[in-house]
Image (cartoon, rainbow, N blue to C red; front, top):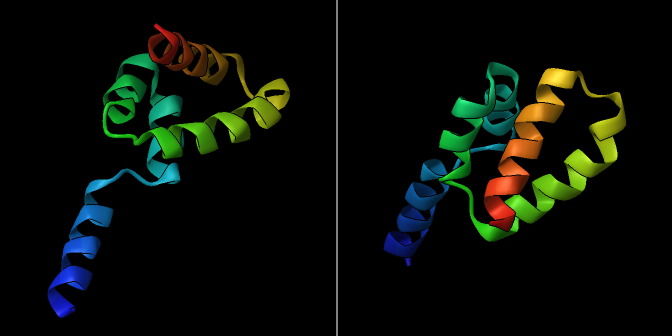
Length: 75
């Protein structure tokens, strides 16, 4: 049982947090794509819901980076 808990913690540390994704979006599309590669489908869908709600108030640079990630996901 303890080994499964430890394995789960290791897997969780390997996944990017939402803060990592937002920080990468602020840096630009290239760094955002690097973090996107580590996202699970469920994390992407949650992030998409969040970004769709926030998109009207986000700076243009972050909107461009997010649209780049969406285009790669949809392709």
